[in-house]
Image (cartoon, rainbow, N blue to C red; front, side, top):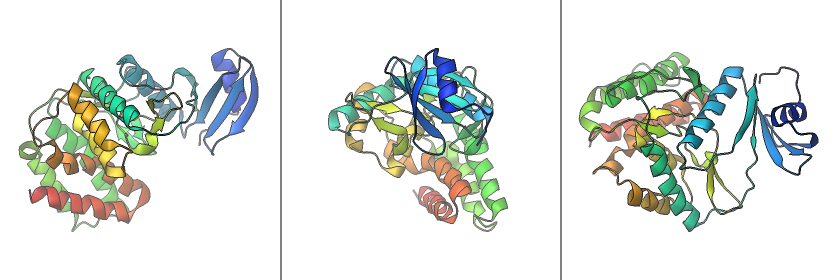
Length: 288
């Protein structure tokens, strides 16, 4: 974790212009800080200044779509990021329906190209703690293979998490992406790391999104990640989404294609279990 010597309370005070009155550690990286006006903010200490800058830029880009709810960014300096604190509630069907509508609005806000970084965000960004390069491309199948799937496959092979004999199944899937990817779509503005842990069900009755790996991509990728790790009331999320921006025919058959990227990221970060899941997902997609 990046450490520039400044404490969470000091950072919160400097970046909000208020006095910090209380600090409450939430985890190794997160600290809740109460300000003298009664508000609470979250101070996150990233692993590097680039990681903090990427997250701040991503949150601002998502907020700029005026569709999804994200914590307001008070400031980022070095490895420290200060945002509003989201008061936690419980998931419910109406909030899930609203989340689906909001995600559709976010995606429709668009991006300049596949792989576009948020304005002010670095080209060398992150998804979780894994490096993620934002390289622009005009053709989704080619871009997705070259900049989202194959870099993590190569690293998994180098690490021994995927064997050299297993890698060709994923390489074959990449070769067939043009015929498997479905109708061409314009670049969508993605959250980019939309697993359930990055959806906060707020006390205000709405869903809030945190920790983005925002970039221009295919809108089905965000939805596939919600499927991958589960999401409360996912049927309602999808219902709200389709009412606002109907998905292309056959989208459910393409979920595995879009899950390959996060599965390989997890294989790199967490090991063999996710590699096996990525391989079985690729095999199933090739058999369709």
